[in-house]
Length: 319
Image (cartoon, rainbow, N blue to C red; front, side, top):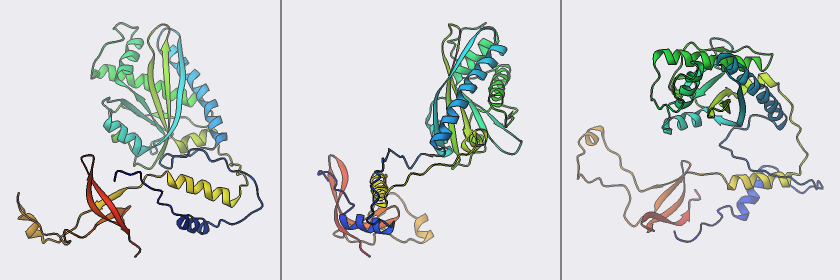
């Protein structure tokens, strides 16, 4: 359709939604300040915990710089550039789509449970190894693979970062894995785990900056900084309901147009060839089904707009 899409939440539907969550008149005049909230991103930590994580990362940056100074000659400066939360599925998808094939070292507080990962881009790995060897090679050297010796040296460097994490707090001692891997998918991540990504920059004297990042399970970080009870403000039911509706409006919903269907025997399916014609179970003048998250909620007629397939919504399924 060429006209802008209308708001599908009618007044009646909004009233039904508000009634379902218990909205009603109240004398509470407290206003709810609703902030942007991405329902597809994890929100594991409270504001107080995020402040504690910031303090932890400051200590961690100093420990990382100290570890590199003890491994390589020269002064190092480390900074934590960002602290973001992700689902493991999102990180795995990014790793598949990325052209870089990073190096990963897993670590944990015992042999059975993964606590986190050290992730090192290839160019950073080359520079770190050269610095460990005393800068005997040019830092801008471009290579796709490390030799067996270089990978062993990178394991020592990444293990030092794991030690820096242990030295940044007193509650847990982390142990690095025995080998480096080139794929995050080979690690024991199922998908729904929530991880905290700490991206950091390391600089030696007048050398170029290098970037890497640490992935730690949110549950692991929570054990390091301690759990805190969140203070919940007292807001009116009406304000809370409005905030919920506003966030619902911003949610992304999958809509699929279903042309028609047909049932075939397995023998008929195996015999299908190019140019065969299948007779579907719907006449050409019948409307199509619009499937919303698995449910046929609308009827529509086929159309086209700006050189693309389109549909015109004709009715709503009330059944």
